[in-house]
Image (cartoon, rainbow over all chains, first blue to last red; front, side, top):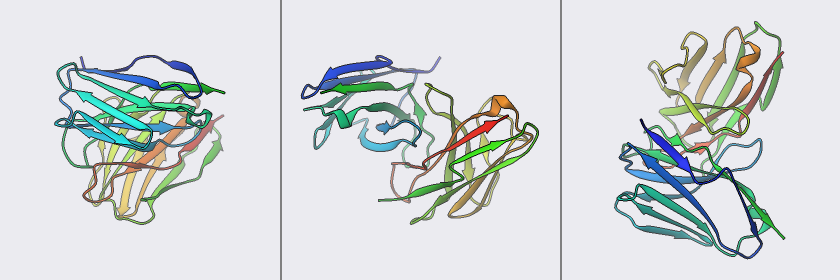
Length: 114
Length: 115
């Protein structure tokens, strides 16, 4: 069966450290993978998109890797800050273009402590 | 960036009533919009794909007669929860992809509580 798993329900780290979140999937062939941030009671906010032919993508303190052989994406936040505390969701789209439905993982709740 | 709005942001209703939720793309046209439902501490579950000018496509297990979707224009999709029951209480979120962009922009969500 198809499955998307994010490594842990919650992750607690110290301010200034690097947070690493994992997204694993089975029985999907995603054309691209996206990471979103969701704050409590709010809709998700897009962070990064990485395509199947890309190994790594960066945006400021964020970095995403995508290994289609391992069927895994890693999401890193360097120099983490308490304001980074939120739930982070990975999402897969099997087709190309924006009109393909996204399948979301359960999310990892990140807490950055001062 | 692209903005998607939802209205209302929260609603409380009695069991048996119908509730309409609006999703609007404010600065772009969206031929497709998506409706999700999220229960506490769970992820977003896609309910249906809303297509402008045609019928919505529902995910397996979602009752199309209970969750009516109307995509009346290129900037507006509505989700009507008919004869709502307490188990329909949830956080409903819509999203829309701007043209030629693979990213989806999400609305702020609507929290529905059915008493």
